[in-house]
Length: 373
Ligand code: UDP
Image (cartoon, rainbow, N blue to C red):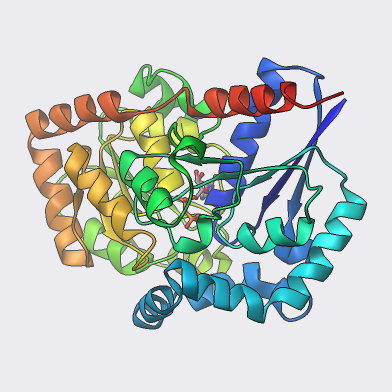
């Protein structure tokens, strides 16, 4: 049986979501055909203190200016190579252990940091290597390894960036961002989902999400939204940010508010909601498009998420309204104008890529079929 190994890490929630969506599609389309493993490379194979990166990630992203400087200073193939050289001993050890623990015919990297350096350390007799890029447009150069066998991206702009970073055009495939099968269901009857989740059926529901880690000014945004005169219920997802969740739960909110930590029912919540307010995480944005759910973006990580903002705004599926007051004004405007909301929903339907995970699974299967037994 051919073996596939997925490399990802919980720096945010999106790399795991995309990995699980592809694994699910592989199991549905080719049941029992492949032996599949997944590793969180930082947690399981990085030396101290790098193994703590997933835990430190939310803190690291709290200083947007420092993040932006870091992104710009390291972006570009030459700079990316320099950094990989610095970390070469750690990468070498990690790859040697991964090879031993998970021998595979195909590696699928769903993370920016496990590409060129990994391919180099796998050596000349290496397995096939595929990268699935999960930022929509402005993906960092780390994603793009010229020596990769297949590079899957979500948009034409990301394809161009891959080529500009030295990946041969024949290796780049524009497919879309993979989302789980539950996120590909037709939107259905909103009120039915409201009943399921215990939301009032006679009010619009605004779903507020800060990625997997409850990032960005989530509480300030929630406050500004709750002060609006517009009638709606608010569902707030704090993700893995337990402190924030506890703090918000202690406060008074003056309208129906529902609080959650890390939620598994995101597909149902997106189908109960009328509007999503989120930081510009690519996974959440793509899932919302599949639910025909318009979006207001309240913040973004500079650099990698800039292009996600462009994608939402240019596709007409959402607004860019950074800062709590602007976010609240955008929510008020959209909810007060049913025709705006309806237009945005139509654009979501046009731009959704529900087949992305299944197509990526098919590409994996065809790459493996080309290998000798
Ligand atoms: N997510 C989830 N439950 C939560 C919060 C987030 O399942 O309570 C998922 C969300 O549906 C998406 C991912 O986590 O698939 C977040 O990915 P995104 O790319 O939007 O942002 P990131 O957290 O990677 O910055």
